[in-house]
Image (cartoon, rainbow, N blue to C red; front, side, top):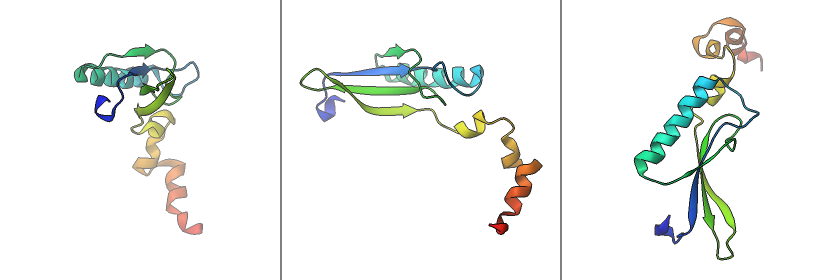
Length: 110
């Protein structure tokens, strides 16, 4: 951040909010992955309990302006296959089985 002239900034690891989708195991894996990335980078950070998106945890970078106000500058989110991970039985979309496959095969009706 200092390369861009931002000497006052903070890094937050934002975790699962009260209202969220997905199982505990997916949230734990995603949160651990972000925590490991921050630790590997050697960045100091604060945990923002419940500050994540409803579909996954994130790293928030906030910069401070000359008046001491904090502004969200960037967000790094775990979104990899978040739709498939959060929708029950979404694998049928990939495997070509079940009701979804029939609807996808008949897409020429559109």
